[in-house]
Length: 258
Length: 258
Image (cartoon, rainbow over all chains, first blue to last red; front, side, top):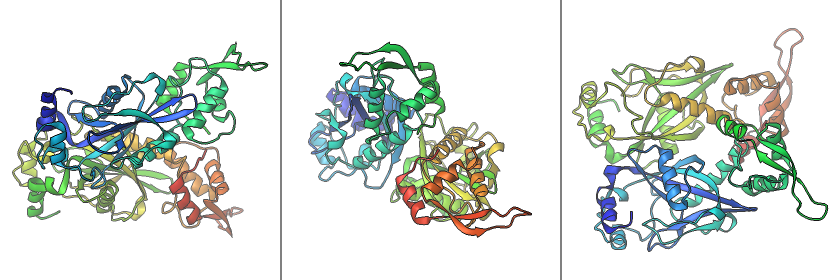
């Protein structure tokens, strides 16, 4: 959606193609070598950042809509997506100083007070996790910037998006105890130290050394290779890899880690 | 909502008081002495049952709306409510043979094809757990029956409500590992056998004897009383009760049980 005509269509008749009153916001986490980030975007002429989001086409499932929104911002198809919570407090989408007149000016189209995007909107939160070193973030037509922020150094976000990030982190962290993670976040072959660091970084706390990896080994989700890596004098740990069949089974059925 | 005037208002101008395109459906589980049930309701003149639901007032939070809907059906205020998933597949709310003409006839009000309740609707699922022996279920204005069904003997439900029940059970069961449960479901003083039976019934599977209760004791969520109950010859187990302060803290912060 880039031409002025497409933008006009979005504001004037978008309610015919999208479900009004409902949006999706995506907490896209990025992991790479012990760092956890999250993707933030701005809105033209508005100070502050927020989560990337969008509307649901009337022909899409919620997961398809979230997948499209994530792909549009990251370029990555079929990222593992998880719904975490829906947000609907009255007044949640209000931004001080933002009204239909200001929006009309920003987007070059006449937007009335009763325009479909001005009415109360409930937003469904999805989270995803990807390797941020593989992603070139791309702004949408409403924004100028889209970039990665360290999870520990987030600015105060617009709307109710501080709460969304908190809830996304909370759900992601609980789900680490019940679903495997790591494919596409670790090298194909990795050391126990590397997968341990992944869990510590995502959980945001120190763990008993090798607790999670041990349980994953026990479940057959990761397997030890007859192969070592040389990382320094007297340091050549064994390598491990995921068993994709067991990984996908665990993803489908759920597991109990501790 | 019982008079014809209130029903007319709901169909004619309800979109002004409620958020259109969004509803709430509630999986209200009932526990009592090793039995797990769920509350189902019908729709006048439609064959089949579904979960109780309703719309969100524009002045309510989602949890307030779910609390109101649950209270209207069960008479119970402030039941512990948990959002579990939002459902939005296109066509999810279609019922064969149900259209605006049939609805007009059932409710005695002229409902057009473009009436606000006929358009695509996304539904937010909440679950609750109560003691079914304490509840007198009450139908809403759209239905004739509202009653408890054994979880193991559910009929095929209308709309996408089979999937909703499956997802509600799945989330409730995962959350048993992370949040305490039992206040209002067990007597004030209970035996280890009774709390163990509660966990087994909710999880729908046999558990290592006293696994959950042991962890709950360790966390201080339940405490042993210096008091026994006589339940037969040579059988007088100790009684336990919840520590409400630690229970509420665990409910707020989450725990890891196994």
